[in-house]
Length: 191
Image: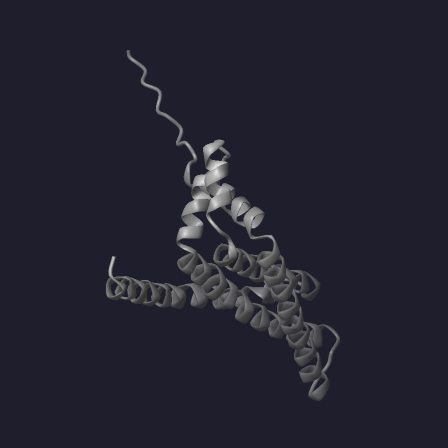
């Protein structure tokens, strides 16, 4: 395939990912509104969960870019479950990294900040804080969420660079399990 065709194909994918990210980020950001119905201490766990989801998908994206095909070909020849899917992931590393790191990872990063801000407001209300004290609590929780996001993503990327093969194989096994679920077969009963 010519480089110009590959470039056009890449541009189409970039446009698609950009368009898909608009409703996704809108839906997830709107979900922060529902935090008002949750106590602030549960909200903190939700922030931590969102941070680790973002770091996890960021790790998968980097592992896909860092992995090489030969180990997966060897596994596929031994019929290791997920190996064929792992080859597909590595061959499409650019797309996998874009979806996992840029779409899911970045949306989770923004969402964790927005969620931390909402939780900060809940904490301030719960303790009757107003004015600067209220702002300081919101800023502190947002700063902590940002620092946790940066640290978790840095750790995930480091692990992904040093151990891409098991990470990609694990992701491939999960993806293959999800995609190859057998649908229940209808039972034909004759009367």
